[in-house]
Image 1: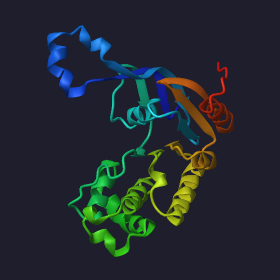
Image 2: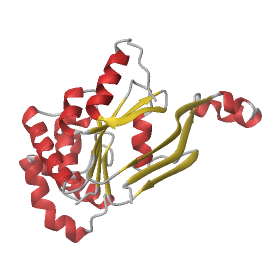
Image 3: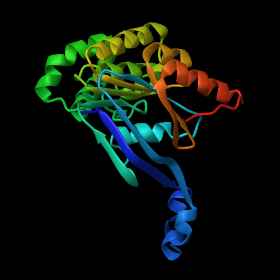
Image 4: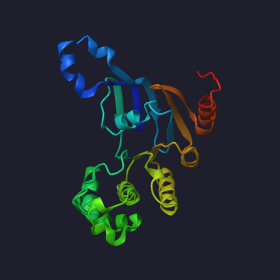
Length: 246
């Protein structure tokens, strides 16, 4: 059984947001003309043990794809199937409250990822040690730098025995030594059979961590192949070289 399956998935958003709510109600025919198609008829499968990069220009649909995987969005059409425990780092600080301490946020975030209070108690020391926050763990989150927030979020995510780890850009935050620690942990997860999915504009990071890549363009899947082949075609296309894809 595949870890993640997209079957004919389409997702759209209103271009006008809340300002169009009353107008759309009064004139329903305007609704279709004011929809942005973020993803169109996407179908693919991802297996456990794979490491997959998602590449594409800004607005290609990468974040929408990850949000569908994480269950934060629902498709307009088609079906998204996810099998197993998933940990997602899509927005730095998401799920954290600025007035709670790092320790309190640790318990809340771990609970959201499916751990019981007993399991969090058992893993608390390991999470704090991995984060390297030391005494800062007892300080309010509002006093944390973005790098410190990333440290705590990643430390929790990799200590929940996740089957699927999804990361959107946040690895670019923080000091190089902690990034190396994150890379080593991601490699460990991959070796244990977990599925790793990553979005980043840092192509060096993607090539280092991933063996496969999905290339999105205007909400459609252009390529789903070996990362070197996909990145070669994607980078040529980004430089304005016309390529043919099938």
